Amino acid sequence: MKIDAIHMREVNMPLAFPFETSFGVTTGRRILLIEIEAEGLSAWGECVAGEHPYFSDEMVDTAWHITETELAPRLLNQEISGGRDCPALFEQVRGHRMAKAALENAVWELDALRQGIPLAKLLGGTQATIPCGVSIGIQPTPEKLMEKIETEVAAGYQRIKLKCKPGWDDKIFEMVRKRWPDILLSCDANSAYRLGDAEQIAAWDRFNLLMIEQPLWYDDFYFHATLQKQIQTKICLDECIRNGRDARAALELGSGKIINVKVGRVGGFTEAIAVHDVAQEFGVPVWCGGMLETGIGRAHNIALSSLPNFLLPGDVSASKRYWAQDIIEPEVTVSAKGEITVPTTPGRGFEIQRDRIEAITVRWRSL
Image 1: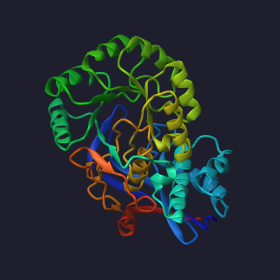
Image 2: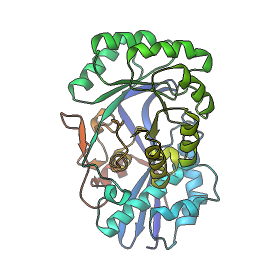
Image 3: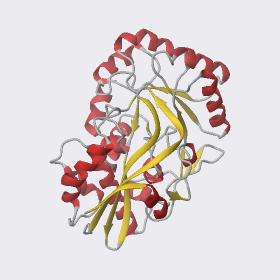
Image 4: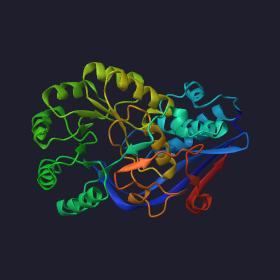
């Protein structure tokens, strides 16, 4: 198929509720959306880069620039067979994985539409439903956190993940475990700790956590291997896993026992599948992480989560947890069992609401 046009849009969407991590508080998102046209069809991708280079070295403004000047020109007017062709086209541009993912994922979606099959099936998905967890940010007070957890447990979510940082950890975990001794509970440190904190982190074993996500440096898996030897709780690797090679090296080192797959972090579906396959080879489960996506990115996460080694509840939760109004219909919903049904219609399985996108578009460029 020949790529006929690429449209770039920046939209501004306020979050339904503030979301706080060790990086800071997010109240709204600037988001780069990509629309690709070919053979009379239109497909969409979402760049998950943040407003600031805090989670990664990318941000929405760098993603816009690199997409407009480097990546989109390499894809435009190309004859390609599908999404797996994109990494080779983009290879000369180092890094910028989130920008690359937005384009590549749109091509995968386009190919699914062209073939008349669900995106999940094209990716190799086998699960009809996916288990869902939630990520709960740092709250103004412990009491507010307890209220949030109460709401999500009542909604049926199968795993509760708590953002943590020094000073918002031990006492919080103890309080939550006392109230809910049996829920599937994990924590996400977003690299807020150092190896010198190993004794404190080892003490978290008593809380029976499913995992501790990326406790040490964001670009490290060597020292995570040292930490994993000192604790019983499984370490989940996130920011440091950029591709299948990283996953293999980390698992051979024993750096962790679970991997969080974020399709934007690894550069697109092709590499996300590679990470999935490496982890499956090692007998290590994976799950899909969230990046405060709109319904476009959320639909792509659902499709990815249908692959067979996505064995743990991911952060793919209902649209209403983040947005007063999403840009897809129907909005993503979660059943009382804490599951999302994987769409069986061609492409992403959700309809784009162009009028809503136009209403919040602040920057637009067609190539």
